[in-house]
Image 1 (tube, rainbow, N blue to C red):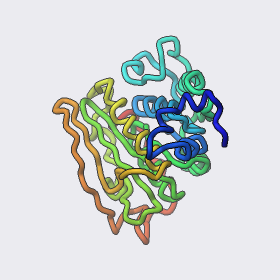
Image 2: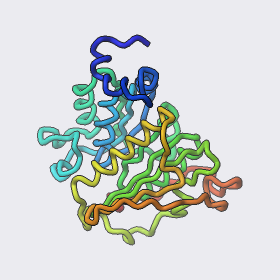
Image 3: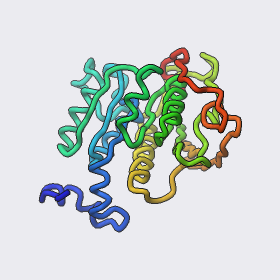
Image 4: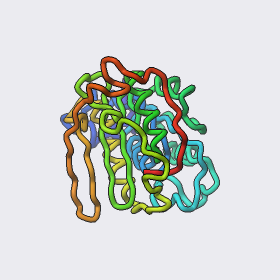
Length: 268
């Protein structure tokens, strides 16, 4: 593809980077990323992915913007309260970078529709806030061979890991957490609270992992759970191994059909 003068200026700081350059920027513009959940994690991820010029971004969320979201969900502003989150985010992205095609899905992904949606994209970012969704996304991505960034945030802490199903040595989410916890065992963010900037810290790491995957540069957080404690300002890497008996990614998986677990709201 040939860059316009405007694109050369817009992406100039990428183009002069040795590990990006013209070819890398073309890769980004020709790539696609699906962001499931346009909240605390998904909005900062979407904001930076749009800014760097990822050519197609899918946004999934059935919820509307609420006033309590604005403390951490940075693509939504006060006039957006009551508007669909995916529409609010799309408007900001379109204003930010006209190179980006934004496709919205204003419904929940479930076992009957998630595979069809994720097949369109090169990379999936899980920005959801409940365990049933996270297990569903992991299992669908493993079954479809789609790379995935998992993350969760609560209070002053966050965690993230990257899953690449095509790599047999990469553990998936179920390798680490075989089953969702019982409802009510883990407090919700409404009960426990969350520092607004946590989504920005962890969500931008998710965006970085997606960019590195698309460019095939650097070391991904595969086989690693990165945890962050904002109060101690400490990052910690925890090495993870594949579970030979994993229900979904082992050689003889027990789970061959997607499961819709009972939904709970914001229970990380």
